[in-house]
Image 1: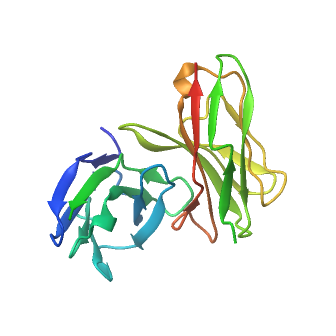
Image 2: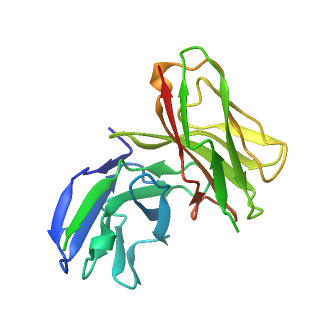
Length: 110
Length: 113
């Protein structure tokens, strides 16, 4: 079983839609949960990170962590064409070995 | 600030050749790491360093060497390139006690023929 499972997509939505991106993980020792955004032919950039279960909001983005189900989500409200990118979930246990999901490709159509 | 700078951006190697991918950061970060990104595989950690003179292996270290003589630089050496090392390589750095907020370079696209 992979440590992190993420649906590769692609996910195509119209502009203004609410987008839900999800990951599941198997290692209960994971404590830090991150979402990175990666535009084509660019390096990943951190969107959000959370330490515990619950929700964290930043503008149009909300990260949700359910440690009991080993499930994390990223919601994007009022999606824009500029949100078209690959979204990577990532985890680590508090140290320096981060585990990344394979990424979900998102297309937001104008 | 330039952030994390990787050179070269593109490289084609023949099987058996060696080369060094360069990575430099100007944020005075202690932690630096190298990843490779392959389709459907996500980012996989090759090697990492928690400070000058200290390096350790990640998930896929075979065929790669690293050293960290300064805080700023963390080069990745391919000893004898193989087609299986065709990939996009990313260098990252982060501050603090963990890798929660990593800053990535723009990547090096390597093809081994």
